[in-house]
Every structure is written in C-alpha cells, then in structure tokens.
Length: 168
Image (cartoon, rainbow, N blue to C red; front, side, top):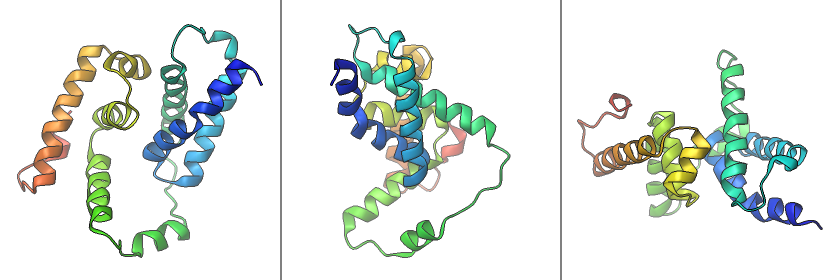
C-alpha cells in the first residue's frame, strides 16, 4: 500500500465525521466522503507530501459540498422515513438531549460560523488550516469563531433574546 493511500485511509474517520456534520444524513455524508476520496485520488499529483493532508482533504470536501449546495439549492427537499423515525425516538440520556440541542443550535448558525466551529472544535484544525480550507483570511476565521462562541454560550444558557440569525 502506498504512502498516499495510507494517508487517505487514515483520514476516512475524520472525513466521515465532518461530512455527517455538514450533511445531517448518513447516506449523503457517505456519498460526500466517497466523492472527496475519488477527487483526492484523481488529483494526488497535486498533493505536496510535506504538508499535513487533512486541510487538503477538508478543502476538497468543502468545495464539493459548496458546489452541490449551489447546484441543488432550488431542488425540493425530501425526508427519508428512516430519518423521521430516528427523530421521533426519545433520547435515553440527558447527554443526548444536550448534544441534540447543541446540534440544533449549530444548524441555525450561518454557514461561515458553523463550518469554523466544526473544523476547529470538532476536527482540531488550526486557524490557518481552517482559513485555507474555507478560502478566507485567518482573521475572518478568528472573528467568526469568536462570534459563534459568544452566541452559542447565550443560546445554550437559554437567553431568550439571543438570535442566531442576527450574527453574520
């Protein structure tokens, strides 16, 4: 097995976790990971071996997701029966309730802030790596993360005046 191939395989769990956070559907997330891996493999000659591969892979995934979102923004939304039945089941632990609330609140964030929180908080990327993935300046990443943290604290405390839509 080649070095590049082992790097791809090693990062599949991280890609799946980020894809699930982006897509909110397991099947669509798996398709996004597959598309990302296919694109990375077909463009492996563009990867410089001296860099960490994670930001490069997340950039590919982000671009695929953004292109698909633009393409399907006007398509009707369908909900699978499996998703509906999962949502109807009551969580059996308090921590699941907290995680559900956190996920719902993050889903309300503007995309820029949500993606920054996921890449830095969940995936552990640096500010510079996140800036590279999202193709924005590092200062923008820091600003979005700061605003997202403040707003998340407010809404998780139950501050009724906190409005996620007001923050850009």
